[in-house]
Image (cartoon, rainbow, N blue to C red; front, side):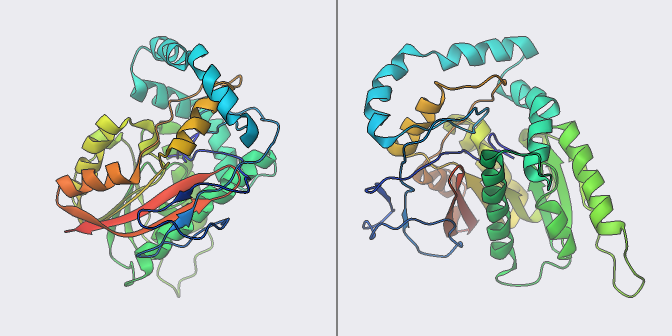
Length: 329
């Protein structure tokens, strides 16, 4: 699923700062600025820096960001805003909770927005184009994680929160047996359409046709079955940590060998930027954006007997996501 997002959904920040805080589970590394980092077993990363910029219009988890010299001043103003009230109104309008807000958003205005971002149309602004790049890098790195050890031919994979099929279709091309699900019926219909166009059209009789993914409209809680691998990209941003723990446990219960997750990392730095972004919600209705610390995600995995095997950070100007591969401990 996109998250506006997605960080299915991706979080966006424009960042340039001469002295950014390092983000490392170990000793702080020498700070560098990266556009994308391939997932590896043990690596430290630098947090992208801040820059002064005029904040464009954002919705969802696409967040407006301001200059680094203004962060402290605006942080003091955050208490004057009331994003929770805006979100409560959204939930009341659709007659439900966070999940219903997400379902409504991605079946309507959110679907149109993220279909463009995940697609190839030129009808996107520079922020959307940058988020497209970030998401594509997350997909690319996830596929690298999946294919590092062996071929995917015949491997069962659940793509939980498939969006428009940006991961499901390449996995099918690799020979995987894919079950792809999303809370949004509109997203699932678009993914099915894209899969038929890309996987079935123009196939010759000499090469075996890939198995079409099985597309279903389901939220994470409704997923069942057993799969060699479960992948969930840019979806945890819709869940607070209290619920994310349960979702991680549920996804792990479906996976026999491997679980790949991406999420928007929670640090003091990113949390302040997210809260500042809530000052600029834009004209569109937005879903909630929840950040998660890597330590919390790792603890949730450890509780159900899993451990992180590989990890990486993908960043562009307006997108960042932590990507981890977990295996049974």
